[in-house]
Length: 161
Image 1 (tube, rainbow, N blue to C red):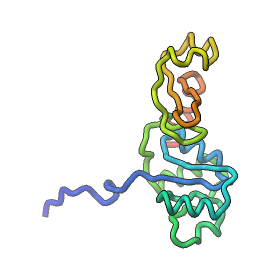
Image 2 (image 1 turned 180 degrees about the vertical axis):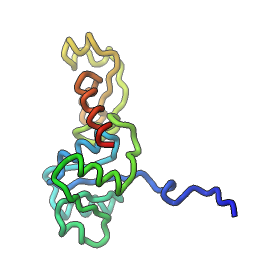
Image 3 (image 1 turned 90 degrees about the vertical axis):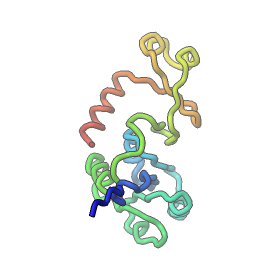
Image 4 (image 1 turned 30 degrees about the vertical axis):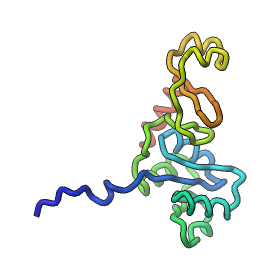
């Protein structure tokens, strides 16, 4: 029998994540890699569980008690080492839905292109003189550009993938 339907795994929605207060560094790197990852370093457990349920997010936690909660999908992050944490998340949820460096590292919002002329007063003079492309977070208004730090981030992301 010739079954040309995609595998169930191919049909699954991209993972939407939420990280507990112990996993701020992991949340930032997951965002940089393109994963939709909510994080609030002041969120209480009950808030994390509510958001995970309401927004259909997978809870990433180092708290075994949170993993046992009913009605929420959760992953207990085993390691304290960042690379191992990222590998565990990737193995559990698959690749990110977005390309690397397309989400705000601070608030998780998708970045938008912004005209170079519109950032002249908002970035250092040297950056404006040496960079051609800029992105803006429409939520927190941070401006992003590709400089040497981005090269280092891409190298780290490549090692982690």
